[in-house]
Image (tube, rainbow over all chains, first blue to last red; front, side, top):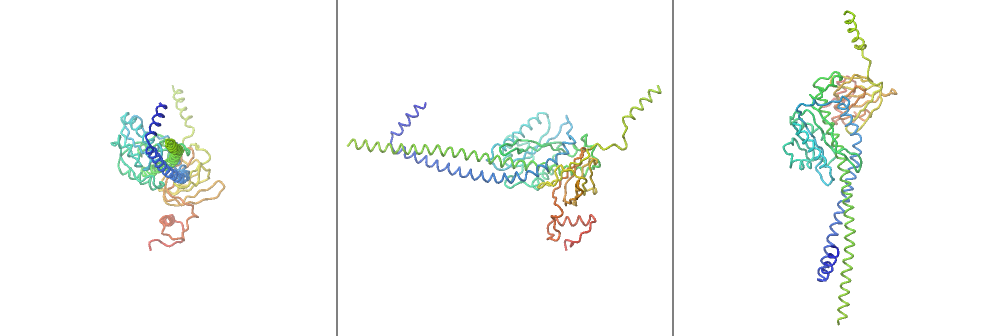
Length: 294
Length: 149
């Protein structure tokens, strides 16, 4: 196969100079465009690195805060009653912007898998997605599960106010869920993140849970306020982890894109030089053979 | 028969050796976490006492406090460290959880150490107005101009 390619190449070069000049120009155009792309991906990587550094700095207190918020659920081992037809709420946290690797598709995959298992068990599921990319992925196949969609996520670092807006809208929708989960990408290190979920419960589930009896002096009002605040906290925690994972994923994606681009540039430069030398050699041969003919 | 009934009655009494005043089951130390979304003030620290203002009144929480959940009201949180020093923070709102293992999570939406709040500075900041109001209703004496003219 390689021999036939070589033969066809030599055949093509014999068809005239015009072919080679066009090839040289093609290579030049391609080289220029790839060099531009490499500049863009390099600058995107630096921007993502700066944003990642800031996001990681803000993640440290947010992690302590988020772990404090779920401590009650873990220590009191709150579980929704099994076997009852529960209503589930899934909150998928992602962002609007792409070029960040598999961040959005990981969350979407986890949500789709959970929907499949829950509907298989006969439970009702609704999904809230934070981030346009997630909506685009889910809308194609699971559009009748979407309850609420949030945009303008990912441009600026998320704040507690953003989380409270999401929680307020969600509670205003009036979907009486029994339990649910926030699905987000947990940040592990610069090169790795993992899709994780944190549980959320409704007021009734918490109030009727068996271990709640040890908690003293709780009336319905206090519990409702406490639960709403806890919901905002968990969403805030998911948002913070998600942005850090997204920025680190974008940094690695742009880094590998720049590396690929520089590899292509090296290969193309070699091809360009070889083609150039071939053109010169051919011209020389033509001149010499023409002079010999005279 | 009487003896058997007597035996049956005595056994439950033995099991309920402590009923009215159960010994506290929590550990002797409090694991205190105090954080706002942007900053952590205490992380699983061991402190002597924490005073918190809640919607149902002001609480003083010591190690082995009975488990409870409360919602905070704007006011001052005082943390008494093990060495006796006290640190005061102003919180706007939030929640506090005391678990059975004597761990306390105080999560505040906004929290600032009192010495960072300069009341003499422009009181257009809504947080400082809130602080002044809470101080006034909390009965603490603070000399400042009333807001709203």
